[in-house]
Image 1 (cartoon, rainbow, N blue to C red):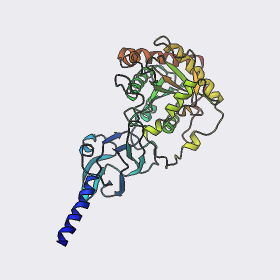
Image 2: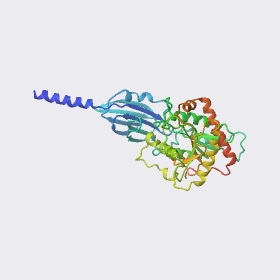
Image 3: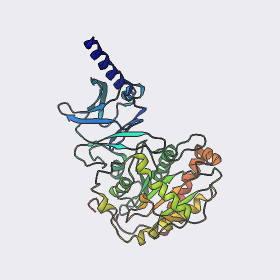
Image 4: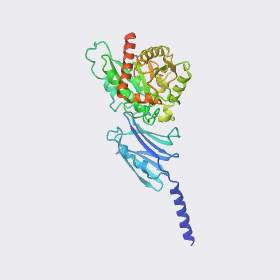
Amino acid sequence: MHALLKIFLLCSVLASGWAHALQLSATRLWPSPDYTRITLEAAQPVAHKYFILSNPERLVIDLEGVEAGTALNALAAQLSADDPYIGAIRVGVNRPGVMRVVLDLKAAIRPSVFQLPPLGAYGHRLVLDLHPARAGDITWNPAVPQPAIAELQRPAKPGVPQYARLITVAIDAGHGGEDPGAIGAKGSYEKHITLALAKKLKQKIDAQANMHAVLIRDGDYFVPLVQRVIKARAVKADLFISIHADAFIKPHAHGSSVFALSENGATSVAARWLAKKENEADLVGGVNIDVKDPFLKRTLIDLSQTATINDSLKLGTSVLKEIGGVNRLHKPHVEQAGFAVLKAPDIPSILIETAFISNPEEERRLNDAAYQDKLVDAIVVGVRNYFDKHPLTAPSRLTLNQ
């Protein structure tokens, strides 16, 4: 009888453990040229351990108290053959109460693993960022071929004098990956709209005789705000244009806007609110706050940015004038606020709010290919007019070791 009681109590404990086993609510995989991110989402924090095995290279993650479920089982199916870092994903029970995820790697990596608390529509997130082994956390990987670098190495365009250099325009599609940006009334994601516009804008700029463009992100993945600035400087950009399509609490808000950086506060309450909202992108997209970015100090150094901001205002005014012929303007002048993504100390930088995705009519137009073409045509004319009035007179001011 005593033995039966022990068995009963043991079964009760095991049943209790099984009852509290955690199932993941979602898994997401975001490959990019810079790094691959895996996100495991659950209703509570996921206890975990991880380690690396070599020959062959593998990353092993043990999820404690997690059981198999639809979301976890779906992780491997999200892997594409062209993922830069992961060759295969295997999931299975390692021991009672522990699910093991094994990532078969294509090369040595340096993982960054961290937890994110619930935010917005997300629950608790366990994030695994797979960076190349030779690079630090959240840096671009020179070993992986990227369109940006290839573009810089191509021959001069026909008809461009040998002494002239191409004007390089860095185009930043706002948000991406874990960070969807604003969501329209009909379900449009800002991150998809901005990427579509950025790709069209690159195509139009590349068609100009003396210009070419570099995309800060060319797919659906998250790029931290500081990294966007670093990338623009790494390709020696002459201009930086960040594309957005924001939302407001009231659906009747409408119109396009252009913003530049401000050293002395925002020019309006709305501009301050928008800058705060855009600067929170890292919280949504997910940055490991325990990692000290080695480029931060020398990239966002506390310089006087007066000259660069003045150039940004001139560029913004030229672009805003042309956009006004395509869409109503939210404000008739360039506004200013403390946007983190505009803080390159030596690159004229503007942020374009193409329209309010929260306005049903403007959301419809933002999804229309013909309207997108008109919008990017206007931006190109604005950029071209800016350089007609302010031509480049010296080699690129940027160097990679600044």
